Image 1 (cartoon, rainbow, N blue to C red):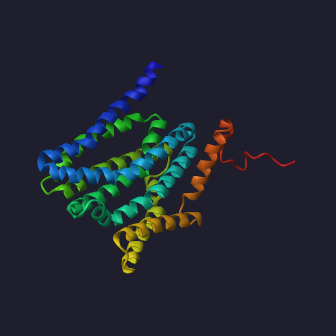
Image 2 (cartoon, rainbow, N blue to C red):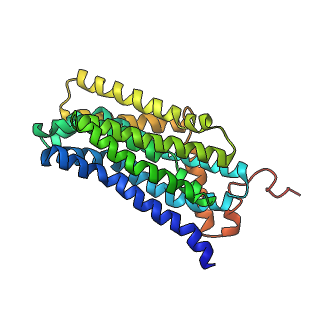
Image 3 (cartoon, helix red, strand yellow):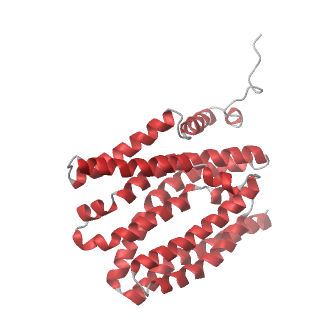
Length: 297
């Protein structure tokens, strides 16, 4: 028992330490080479850019892991659950990230002032990069199927790669550092998605296309709504509110109408959670299929 726990837990612990270097080492490099002002801009952009996806992704991940664990012996069911949670994350994250990216200049100027406008470009880069990292619950899936070594190996590659990328980027300022670091993280996502796709027996392309419609509606909608708000002559705060609420409403309406996936996934997950609090055995087979329904007399 202790050996199994060590075999499972040790790679996770070492991988977490490697990722700690990857996630914090770039700040050290930027501060050391470019100075306090640059690291302040970079740190603000990184922290707020990663916040929406990390927060929502972690919440969904806490639900996804036990579901993946229950389904790990059935590749078809595991793939179905993986796609379900990917679509759910996209439905939650994409409208927020798309809006934040489109109105980042207005929000930074309104909340922090003109002197912080240098953070707008890095903020947009990390919003997009953070969304990519949080969109696919690959970490929970790989842990559920016991592939904990993947997290360790990718972390051991990503940690030095981030440091090198940050150092190379300092030659041309914070925006280039942001681009190069985001590319390293994107590479880690690509690797994780590839391994997760093989673990579920589906193609990586199918995984990438799962949130595509939600992403498209969110991006196009937020850009159009900001343009409309500015055409109407609204102030900065009104433009931000109009764009955010409009994008959320647009995506929700499209989901309810079945134009983008995700709404049925939300209903299924919520229903299963409610059933589990009453009858865990019934929840394991939720939602019910035609074969599992009792025959009418």
